[in-house]
Image 1: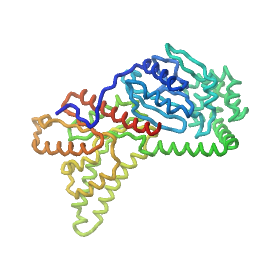
Image 2: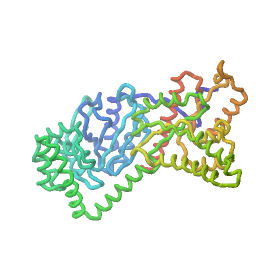
Image 3: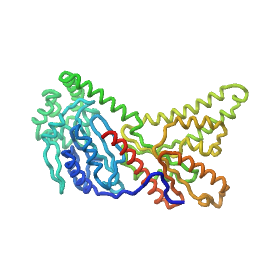
Image 4: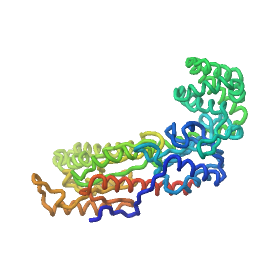
Length: 457
């Protein structure tokens, strides 16, 4: 048996340092006609990223070229993307950001507003931007007044809170350019409300700052709808349409299902993968689906329940309800989840019941189990852990070789019907198994993201 068998090529990606990546990214953006303007957290460039991601401000029309610029960088892969009305996020693999972290999130902001209504003009911010040099990097940053407003409003007007990380810098920006900040805010909020907010920030009066949130939001909405009613209505409608898609459509959910016989090392593999996959998506979580045992008991009651044998259908309907509830639980886990990109590693799946029904105590009708399986959401990548028969036998437990072989053949036959799968030899050293699974996941995520971005561009 080979160490790695897959229906698509899997390869390791070389790693770039943060400085190398930033140099290549700035060059690529310029080549593609995008003026790189970094919103904040650039003070540590090129060797250190002070934020969890890198935020660029671009014009909406420049987004396709910005994505192409990122795609043109060698030795990196885009393994995820999310699109919101104001920002498009790309998750990149192959960049050594810090020890143990080889992923970086790059955000392209194309709107500075609340629910689609702008509080600052992107064009005005870009026109007033100033050039900054860090090492061999040249890039633009917003002027001090604009950067202070953006750093404050990103959390204040949107979520109604002050982000303490940025507050000292916002205070300095407002204090040194008080009049400039008021002038920038007045078109959307009025001079009186703007002056009150600016002064309360300078004084560090958080209570007054929070009291300004309501008037700021009302003023922004009223002025936008009075000046541009049709454009504002369209912008708000677009905002909620895209937020609904980000929250509830499966586009932003990546699922990897790891299956195999009991004792194949599924749990330990997931425990090893989660730390090294952090930052590959907005959220990385383990989901122990494990419905076969539940479904097995429920379906066995269907076939063997006393209510069914004595002519009463109460046992039958109760069991059906359990299976339906199981299906709803799995579907709801797809819908009710963290916003933005989610990578979910599943240990086991409902299909285990179809592969090894006796192992899960199921003696009922297979047609019903197969029907339920077809109605459940499918995974993006399947990883099968298997080992030679002799590796599964111990001195205390020596199951029949024929039974193990039949189970292995059943698992392999099932996984080969999936669109994307990988088969790993779990008897190999743990680091090789983890490495093979990691490479397969990165490759699968990169291919899926490339298809999505192709249609987007």
